Image (cartoon, rainbow, N blue to C red):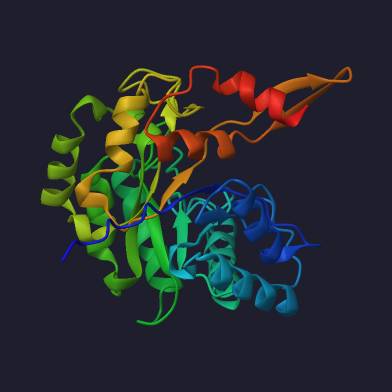
Length: 309
């Protein structure tokens, strides 16, 4: 009996608007040829959140079922304004905790079980103190065994970011009471910029397994990087056009040890001038096609611009 190859779970960041809700996010993902996606439940830079439309959510769930998108692979990204690592201003620290609680409730209302979170920046308090603050905050947010899982994102080490090394992520996980509700989002651009050489991804996965355990990887952000390894800058590049390169990223996407794990593109939009107006367009349809074909398209940017003209 011949075993069927496990389907690649591939998608990108998509929009979520008040008018279209989750249904609009699903339709956008499908237009890219994706079978998963990631979204913010509101603007990542502010606290403005509108009520979730239950009717649009039900329609979204129905469409996902019809089109073969498993909701277990769909991901919410927590907003950037949440910072659990710095408690110097207790009002801001408590705000971050309470806002993250709200985001988890919104995700649960939408039926989404995975929420990606940037661990935070210690802003001068030191990494050890930052880690302890994150642990304290997560133990307040995750106050029961049941509920959405927080996926701590590996960070590039820009400024005073916490979570730049696997050891730092591990220390956070170890300090959380309900560890079943904490997993990891592996970001290729971030780990490259943090100092992990993706020319030897097998070595990286071995190290991750020894420190944290591969069973803790919930999703992978497959971004190229504008920077060399250990630059600590965090600047994403389009798939195959950066310093990580197409071949290295394809190895990540199709790695045997990452089968069944959602892969999400967060690559930059492409700028294009049409009718004298500068606009930006998502490259995800073209990038997903390249990934599925396992073949680099050197005319990627030009094709994106031409497609949207």
